[in-house]
Length: 304
Image (cartoon, rainbow, N blue to C red):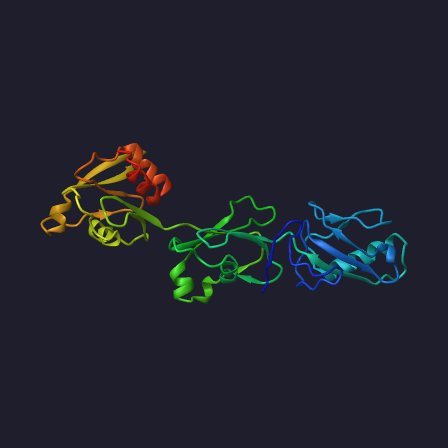
């Protein structure tokens, strides 16, 4: 499948050493190598590439550089080092990558099983998302892929934005990008409107960017008004660091005497009970912080 889950003490897919059979890719820091020198058991061993890209072998006066080399190129470099040190006249060297630890891909955000795994072979974006269990129900409309900087590059990492609908529903093959290791995939959650108070099903309802929602739409998702709802409601919207209160003539809107009112992501739409006092702004801020489930708990706990 081209990926390997990480685990305690493990970086990549490493079958029983030294017979690992991972795809040949350029070697990087912290990769585990199985080095075999024919008829020289004292030089045959597994070695971990250092953070600087070098590793040591017994009796060689200098460390060997592995970073950036393919396994075949490293075999030639080790053989040349053994010749130069006059240890073996015509060495036959085999290098196998036992674990890839230099190619992490992380998948976080609104996925079912956030994880980091090693790209032990060719990986596509859809494969990485599948490895994370797929998108969570609260996933937003886009996926952010942060690509690593090139060696020696002074610019910031490149962030690629990919629309979920185009990737999955549209099946655009150009968006199923290749991943080589070092990428960070993040799936932001969709914005939500919090509907609380005297409605039948208080909740946090997702809204997609660019798609307008409204008071009547959110009331429908919340199952409609519960008994004893007031004729007026309120929208609490954070603007410029403060949460502003916007009165809504709810009864008039429901009777089609006033136009429906649009709602934005992260708005709190609050329908008070005409028998109790309204929630305080502090309680409403708790709703925004902890979600509509917390808002429902606040209401029934009697915080007013």
